[in-house]
Image (cartoon, rainbow, N blue to C red; front, side, top):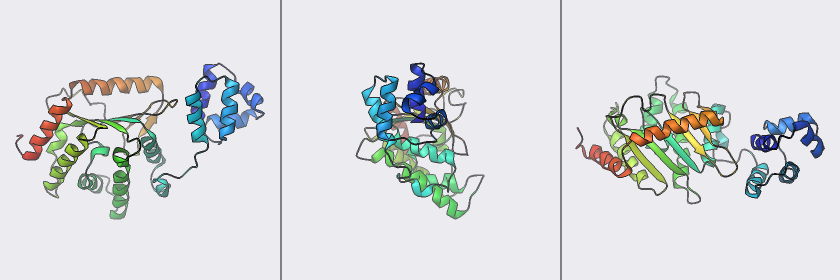
Length: 275
């Protein structure tokens, strides 16, 4: 919210000191508002935007809505302090997004993972965690998938899945991958989900820069790009970086199989017909 207020102020080239005085605030207080360290009320959002001359009633209303939203009310609230802040930030962004584009060069992307696959990926990671910690992380990842199935404004998801991930072999047996392939077929049937498979024949440069997630939100919030890493990801709103990663995603999507061919390929793997 603070970042959006700053963007509106910078758009009209008004110094922060001037708007702070117009609001009857100290410059230090206004600075904390723009950096997200100080909450303001719905009425203060309206007043501030009026003084800035913001001509975006829907955007102003959305910022005002967030201003009065209580903190720590999502399903993820009980996990605060138990997982890294970067991961917590990503969960909140993911839950608020209208569209999510996700790509991973090695594994099935998180929103599409089956419970058994999730457990294998977490419990058998090189940086192994305790059984209790693993179950905590499994629970969180599965809870995140509510974005796909919720009845009110389900998130639109476009996922790029590497065909190479279908060749994974697990100590727990082939049932893990069979369940995962069924899960892929199930989610690809959802009207809000697009799944494309990146074939084994794709040039290795596609996806070589690692996993990414692009999130878009209601007006006026800016797009966020997240680069996956073991610490919960690195998130950016920087327009140049987001644009670069958008081009990267679109490039990979352009060489991925069309939706129908992707479903056919998953079905062939599930039936054991693809060698």
